[in-house]
Amino acid sequence: MCIKKLSIYLHWPFCLSKCPYCDFMSIPTKNDGEFFEKYAELLLLDLENSLEKIDYDFQIETIFFGGGTPSLMPTKAIEKTLKFLQKKTNTNAEISLEANPATFDSQKMIDLRNAGINRISLGIQSFSDINLQFLGRIYNSYQAHSSAEIIAKNFYNFSFDFIYGYECQNINSFEKDLRTAINFDCKHISCYELTFEENTLFHKKLLSGVIKPISEEKEIQFYEFTDEFLKQYGILHYEISNYAKKDFKCKHNLAYWNYCDYLGVGPAAHGRIKLGNCKYATEKIRNPFNWAKAIEEKNETYSLFSKLNEEEILQEILIMKLRLLKELDLCDLYKEVSKNTVEKIISQKKLQFLQSQRLIKVQNLKKIKLTKTGILKLNSIVEFLCS
Image 1 (cartoon, rainbow, N blue to C red):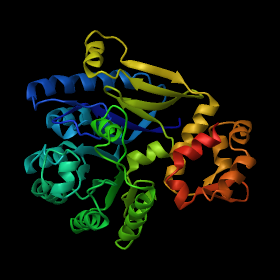
Image 2: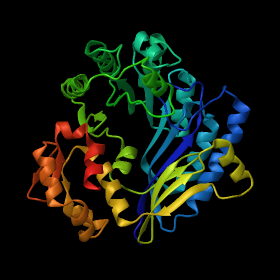
Image 3: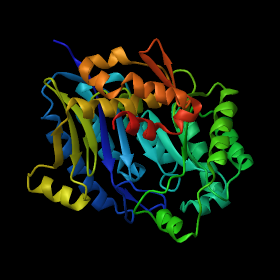
Image 4: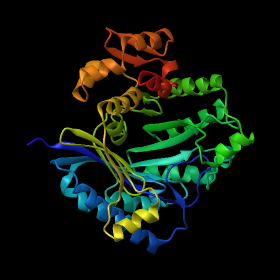
């Protein structure tokens, strides 16, 4: 019997403070140990119930605790969750946890490592006080450096997240951030351009003119600088926002980008699962308290469990796989959807137009790759192809 690979995402919705740019499902909550323990039990129950829907034999290749701020999650609950999954988990599985510099100390990281976490994604965002204040982070530069030191001391595999592209920032300050990460021997770095998502404080400030986006020219400068600077240290660009040394790419995120199966557990968690010959999009109840009530009352926690049609599947594959900055062979798409659907959506006429705009490169009429300009316009390219 064929054993399929599966990734698992567990969403912890609580954080100490809501960042002004964040549109993820997160709720500011005081650090309440008893409440968190009860909530973690519900998360484990949701995981158990969700796994029952998987109708094939699987091996778990990656587990990711995301949020919110999962470094607030009780360590014993994380350990209990990983022990529950142990029999189905590859011994070499990547097991990641997102951490906020203001929510842990050395002992917490030691405990997490002993519980089974082997990769930390640290949301530094910047090592500069000015930048941290602008971004609404709840820690200062000293705490950022201290947290990075703790992570580097306790984990071999870790990533730092940075945000770039805002008014008070310049290339020099961003270079200092990246250089500091390199000095900590960070082997994976994520660099996200600041975006102004609806229903965030930053979006409201944007509409009122309190803050302004940087120019497209400056955006390109940041992007090109990051690529060239990190390349000098063997940290190579492998996805639109991600850079890594050899063998340190994020396996969990690669599962998303390669359109593999992943199970989303916890409030607002998304998933993509293939059952039989059909691909399903899943989403859990968004409101954490409604989600918790559904579990307690033994009701369904999925707000969405929908079979995707071929055009929807193809659109998602394009959005995901083109992010990986490598050639996409159109013939490989036939494994997921029919040739007719591929040719209908990705017509040669559309490809010729995108090539004339220097947004993609086309090889042998069947392999496409984004140009540097195309990388920054991925969503528009996919929208054009699927229109």
